[in-house]
Length: 257
Image 1: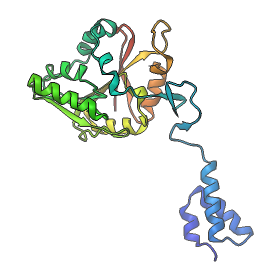
Image 2: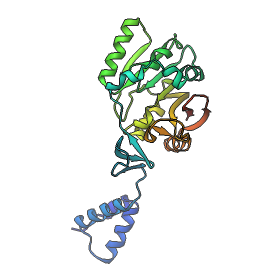
Image 3: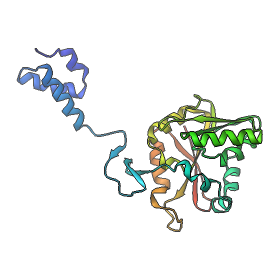
Image 4: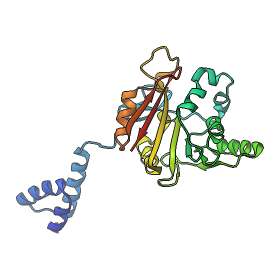
């Protein structure tokens, strides 16, 4: 059976190759399908993802834009999130001040965990709310328990997935991601969804341990450089608008559409 020319025209670059083939010999449906598949495999991968053996056992076998993605910290590590010296180690009071939240802001805390930042932000947005997003039901259960115990009414636990935080479209003023982005299994998809959740003036505040500083005693896979972060954010249409480097160990980077 000859292959319909309208199908060849619909294939773009692959159709051009098939057209050249058809000019020299009869083209069957199976031959056309084979050529389309070969052409697809020959095209460069524009997603930024790559699968290969993990260089670091603390990471998975997926790389994004050259960066190995780290394993997610499970709910078993909840105690580390609430450690008593965290404010001193990370300058969390400085971080919260630099967010410059307004009382009416809708804020999303991605990878909220036990709610360390969620509940500190909730008092800063008394007329707004905090969407506490996590993919682990154990973390969300802990969030709900704390919300009820403290009688906090502007915190909303949200069950996200590995590629979608399930935020309202164009409804979030600030998205805070603290030491979690480097663990996203699907960073491109997650950040696209986050970008779509931003209001026209919405911001993303990304906090990651400084890869440029060898004195930061964190495993390399759990650190990120400004250059790498900017490259990954630019890929989904976010630009760096501010950089705060007054935290003891971490970058605080702000992005907007």
